[in-house]
Image (cartoon, rainbow, N blue to C red; front, side, top):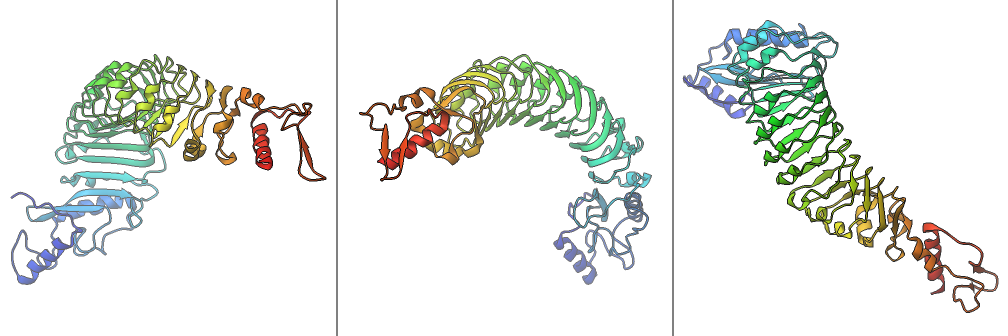
Length: 473
């Protein structure tokens, strides 16, 4: 008969089982005194597999009546098949505070692959002392059941990803983060037709990304970040029309962003930062209307911002184009992205004025334009500086200045931006002129201030003038 899906920790299932036993009724299965409602071969395989990872000291004697009963193993879940418990989820390592920690030299025992109902298998912080190579044999025994496979924070795991993983026909999620894997990316991935999440980040993978990765049509998340991958972004990526998140940051990818990305209509995150991408910004970006985060920083992209219809990206919240060798001006169309929260344009060669319309972006909380060639006046009102605080950065723009009439208080003044020079000069006075109201004034018989011989430059002169007006008004 089919199976009744349940989780071993569910209280209602346990109560039902006890009730059937107490009433002597025969439901889905009958518990016989002294016999666990788990196939003996299943229990023996599970215990042996766990011992291989945590050590032979563990024997499961404290479990009653079995690993899926009242005192289950943390990290083990079960389902009922044909009136018996079978393991469906196995998590090895320090995933939870009360999880079983791995031994100093854990091993993959053949008994692991006898758990043929296993749907999810995960290893977290388990393998530390290299070299530990994942066995290549027996994985085909999981081909009809395993849907999720994870290796997280296992620096001792070395070598390539076993080619046998390609035989896991039902795999929907493969997560390999923070391990010591090396070599090229898996090549024979044609059987991963149901794969929805592929995360191979923070390892030592090298080489180019195969065109076949663009044929994983059901993929929702693709993360290849923090490796040493090289070459161009495959044109076949335009076929990943279901993709929601694409992260290939911190690699050695080069060439242009392909025009085919315009087909990724559902993409919400595109992160290609810290690569060698060049060739300018493709206009295809403006067709990606679902984008919420566009992060292209630290690439020699070049070109300018003017060729993109930024107003089309109505959902964009994060735009980071810092350190991308951009030239030209900052288009006003950027101020039409109403949901923008973070705008990073720093460390480029941008010139011209900074439009005050950016202040109308109510959600904007971080704006960085420092390290450019911007010029003219900052015409934001005082409320804008109060809202942004130190999250507004405009220093290292030698021709950019701050009008005196918009000068905020000292604590809110944008760091590294000088007062506009022509306005400072307009308030300078000559104390040699007897008709000058500001030439000399007294605050009593003993104290006087005179500005007849000193020219105060920059922001400090402005503060002195403000103080002066407060004293004499």
